[in-house]
Length: 248
Image 1 (cartoon, helix red, strand yellow):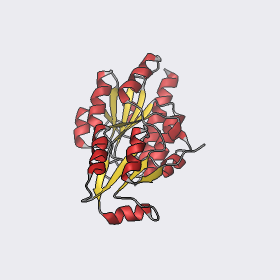
Image 2 (cartoon, helix red, strand yellow):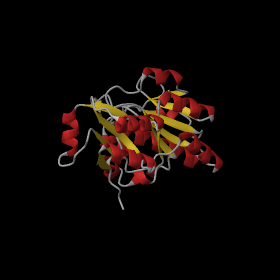
Image 3 (cartoon, rainbow, N blue to C red):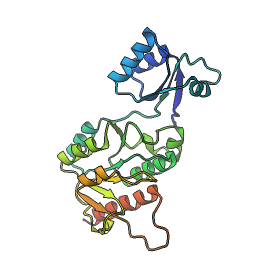
Image 4 (cartoon, helix red, strand yellow):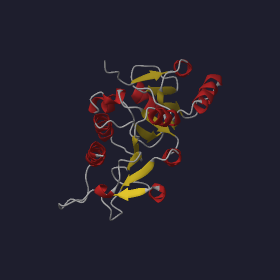
C-alpha cells in the first residue's frame, strides 16, 4: 500500500510524533511564538537534526485550514531514511559493487521521483540527498517514483560534501555529471564502486563539489538544445553503469 505523506498540527502533537520515532521531514514554527512547550519542541528538533523553518502565521493558516495549528506544523515523511555510513557498510559486506546517486539541490519533486524510479530499476544501492534545499519526499514524489521510493534506500545528510568524503573514504569514486569537461560518460569506468552526482535543474553541480570529484564527465549532445532534463540524464548515466557492469 502506498503511504502518503501527512501533516500534523500542534506543538504537543509534534513532540509526541518525534518521541514516537516518526520520520519528520520538516517542522514549521510560527514566528514569535514562545513558551515552555515551544522550547521543548525546538530542543527536540535540534537534538534529532530535523529541518525546520520560522514562518509567518499566514503560512500555517494556509497549511492547516480547519485545524488549530497552535503555532506549529510538521510534515511526516512517507518513508524512513537510512544512515549513510551503515548503508555503505552493508552494501560492501554483501559483496556487491556500490552504486549510489547523490542529488545536489534538486528542486522538482517529479524529477526526484523519476530518478528514484530509475535508481530502483538499475539496482542502485541508494539515493543521497541534503537535509535542506532538496525537493521533499512527499506523496507526489512517491507517485512519480511508481512506489520505488519504498524500495530504494534514501539517505539524508547534513552536507553533500561530507557524504562525498565518507564515500571516498570507502574507496567509492565520485563521478560528477557536468558539461564543464571534455570527457564523456563513456570514458568513465563504472565497474568500480561509484557514486554519481547530479546537479540542480538550473545551476548544475556546485563548483565546490566539482573540485573534490574523482571524475567529471558529460553526455554528448548532438542536437541544438544544450542540456537534458536531469532525470533523463541520470537515467543515461545509470544505464551506462549497468551496461559496463553486465559486460565486465
